[in-house]
Image (tube, rainbow, N blue to C red; front, side, top):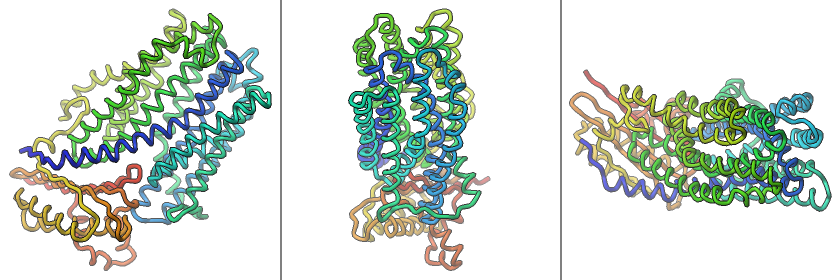
Length: 600
């Protein structure tokens, strides 16, 4: 029996509008600040140094991906581990994770930078650099490698500000970095008459300055982190494990750029690299939108999936796809209509070079519509637990189906085949999904999202917002008990749900919000019951300080065995629950408890 509560739809619509849109915009804007610096460097290089400048930017681009790999490993892994600690209200472990993130980022950077500087010449040759641009490329690379710590440390404020919910500061800092980068580039190149090394120096100074300033903000204030001296090996292993997926994605980009550079140089020399620089800049611009949208969407999808809220999963994915197409369709039209003007913007005017770059821009535009679906679905499958499927599809799109067609088709059809390979790479995973879907359908999953619709078809639910005051919490508990009784739960089950929900909400009120704060918590109860089986799903979501009431009381009981005596309902739910899932999404607490009793 599938009964849909009207309040559920209203509750989720409000949540999506007020919270989801806010975090999507924050993610896109902050990513734009990061990648705008890369685009600005390319544009300035083209304006002041022509095709040679653009070729150098293509050659050195993999170094950015390499240091991004280090930053993602330390920053993403550290922020994830810290979120777990903050959810337990464990400040010591949170500070330990932050310290580890900082130390590992710096240590691995120096190791990687030393190797790059020692083997700089052979690395540049592997990246397709030769001839007249070699010396300038080496000078640029040496400065960038020496200052690559800024790129690595950038991942700390980028991830930890999200964790703290400081979205405005996040946007201001990374937009400020882009502005500072542009100003320094122009000053060094135009007024101080420096060469390409001026662009490298401007990039390094901007990245290091903003990264250090961001870390300073993280170490100041009432909810600041602290640098501690001791940490354990287990935490190091866990941090590296959590940061590996994002790091591998960036490392894959490094090898992809290396291979593409060599393919392009073999076909058209440094002139081809100049066109590739335009192509890469446009791709980075699209990734600002699509990756920012996908990252924000996947976080919420992961939460909804744990709640077995398949309706909201489809709703949020539909909304994300619409937003994606709203952005990329005008972008696609503009690039296809004005490819020449776009190339002029990068400083390309020579007829032959202009033709190569214009074709690169035109063919790139064709890849935009399928890229919306590709990137959103990659992050979706990763969020809902189809990790191996997501990783295979990402590998196919980001490397295999991109480098493979370019390698085999470019000698036959020229550089146009290289540019079109991104469209092939964006369509191929979607085709592959259509091929493998029947195997998932046989396992009981449904639709393109591979959802388990058992809860949606058979369950009943109630969903509403609760104000963070004692009277409203007590009233909401009465509503929950009434809902449980209507769904024919036993007196013991009603007491379990009622008492545990009351204690969890009271604990959240006490630890997440100021005493007189006028805030709300979103509550959802799902019940799936038939003759033999019973599943109860409890969910509480709030935007206060990061806090997990269940882990808090479990940790308290380790120090004081009688602590659970003051939290009888939480003690009961810990013993009864089959799954307890806590997750922070951009500073939002999401606690889901699942009781799954199968009889017979």
